[in-house]
Amino acid sequence: MFSLLKFKEGAQAVSENAVVRRTAIPEGTPLEQLRAELLELMGQENLNHHRMGEIYNHIVAKKLAEKAGFKDARAYFSQHLVDLSQSSLTMYGAVAAEFSEPVARRFGVTCLNLLLVYKGAADVEVDRDEPGPTVIEVPDDKGQVTAKPFAQCSVEEMRRALRRKRMPASSKPLPPEAVARAEQCSEAVALRFPQGKGTRVKAVVRNEKGKAVMDFKGIPLDQLNLLAEALTAALPPLPPAS
Image 1: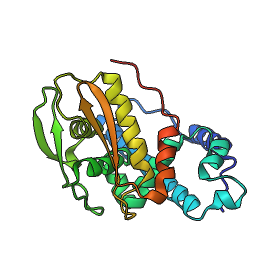
Image 2 (image 1 turned 180 degrees about the vertical axis):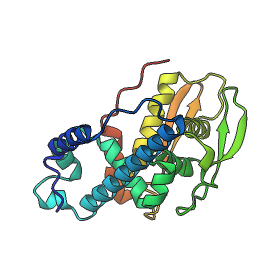
Image 3 (image 1 turned 60 degrees about the vertical axis):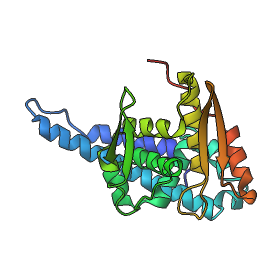
């Protein structure tokens, strides 16, 4: 069984040791060298998140929290990993269940998670071993759509593509805060039903005369509790309007 009880203290110790080992950046360090180091650090972060997803999936699949006397994994993590949100854990788990570690390092966990949500919203096929060529329809600021391979899409472009798929045109546009909240709810539901598990769940947001309406499709009767968990879980606060 995984011992995560002292995660916070352990993380602090690692951080302190890392600070001791590292030296100041030398004057005159080439820009390209610093860029390469940033890319390496980003890759390591994605590997860590993928591994966290594997650990999370193992704990859930083996019911380790229940065997230790907790109601479920969520109850365990809420007590012993208070600095790590459940939404982050489920995102890492969804990506780890669908994609390999090298793929996560290459494309990033956040972008891959958005790809999984886009897959459900747009009903497209995704090659789990090589998701890069997946065609994404990305709108620009004026609404003009360009088809781009996933490998060339940024996180922001993936979010815009998702919003376009979820929000049909309406004479009265939705308020920005409604769009953002609907996107959070849709992602929360999608994360409860990872692709590749034999279940095809869709969370679709419709614009009905300026009012956001959500439809949920494909949820097995014996998994309605997962939908309830997603809808009752606390969502993070919306970022301030720019």
